[in-house]
Length: 170
Image 1 (cartoon, rainbow, N blue to C red):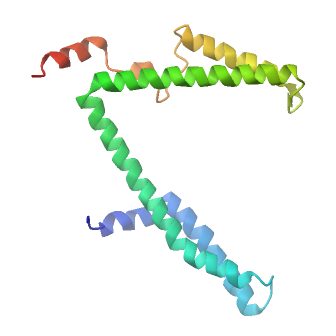
Image 2 (cartoon, rainbow, N blue to C red; image 1 turned 45 degrees about the vertical axis):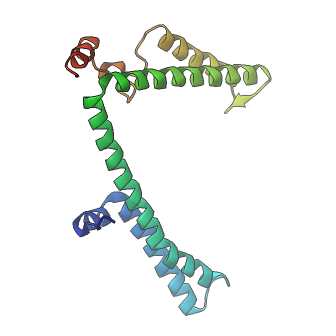
Image 3 (cartoon, helix red, strand yellow; image 1 turned 180 degrees about the vertical axis):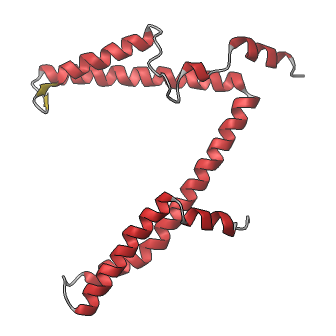
């Protein structure tokens, strides 16, 4: 089993998600402890204090695990991007197609709902459906609707580079 690096855990405890947990659970512990000791507040104050005391390390552990998993996933993605560019390219194309299909389905559902009288803050829903359908058509038509995002086609490796890398493999 891998040992926990105390420095990385200490760095995590000073990160923003951990500070949010410190403030939330620390404030809850102080508030419920005061209410319990002063005899004020509802009868479930002890249970709320128990929840804060038990939940605090659990939430911190889950946040730390999430951060470690994100770092590991970014590292694996960077390695995959360099070692298998064609596989990465196909995966990104598949994600873009799925996102376009999903946007098309959502836009059609908004259009149908709008014609049935559904309003979004007083605005007919089918207008939003038409707007989403326009984005979908632009994406299918080849316009880069993913500009600057994780699915931006400019981040794909060029075709020549992919073919060049494949020729060196034995």
